[in-house]
Image 1 (cartoon, rainbow, N blue to C red):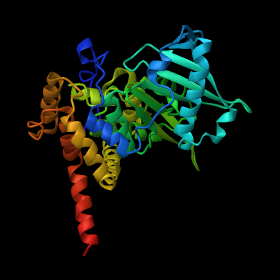
Image 2: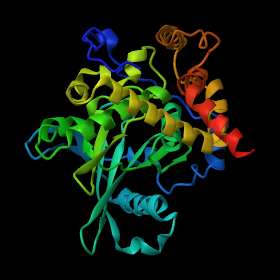
Image 3: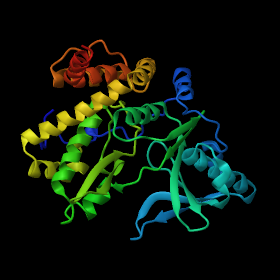
Image 4: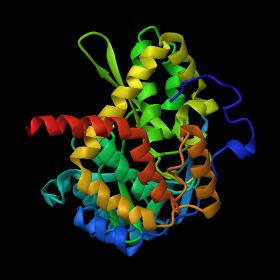
Length: 368
């Protein structure tokens, strides 16, 4: 894959941007059964609809007085005891597999609501009453495309994801890190930032998104996690928004390098990495994805078999994407794809073909 700074490829007009209001796709019976088999479908004490019954809300400002797009909600006292108790128990389900023996010292500090975007999430802040330490998690509408995105992230990325569903409700853990747009503004040019390691990670992140067709990874839809190392720091870029899993028709919307919001990261890569290094890091990431795919082949097969028959995009977008991928990869492999799930399945084979052959060859040698 070419890693370039081509201004003609960057989004320049409304038609180049991701769909602002993606429709929510229901969870079908086959996907529901998969979630049950994988321990993702559980009975939750509070649902998304319960949280919609707040009586009023007040805007939340950041430390500079700017609107955060989040609102602090307030509930009627008759509903609050039920909601608070249920939210604490959900946190225990997320963190201790439903062991409620520790919840007596936990409380709900705040319930925030965001009306911006597709999923209209609630953000729950849980606080430890003994030491004021707090944690967050999110409750959203269970959207099928988002669930496919979360599962593909869990299986194919270096990150594990904890989430649960209960009919129309989706609960997700908080993914810690510095939002990409904040990192660009406050830390990218810091002398302490290891720019070569960060550039390497952005190349790998770009590759991960494209291989599994996760779209709309603009800087505010991912976070940068920093880990101190023996010398300097290591970086991991993690997706935090999975609404655009294989939904859009334009190929470039699955490549974070082409979003103007990510241009500072692209500049960083082109300034500190040569062509050979970029190709090396892309090959490394494809190899790691292939190993994860091989080790979870039955799980990924079950998921993709369901995804191929599910409707998570429009016929027009499916037709556009398979045409653009055929042109980009100089292939006709996508011609028979009639759904986004079929495109994802074919795309994994096309982008990882060389790596899969090497693994099969090495396995064959080991059995002799």
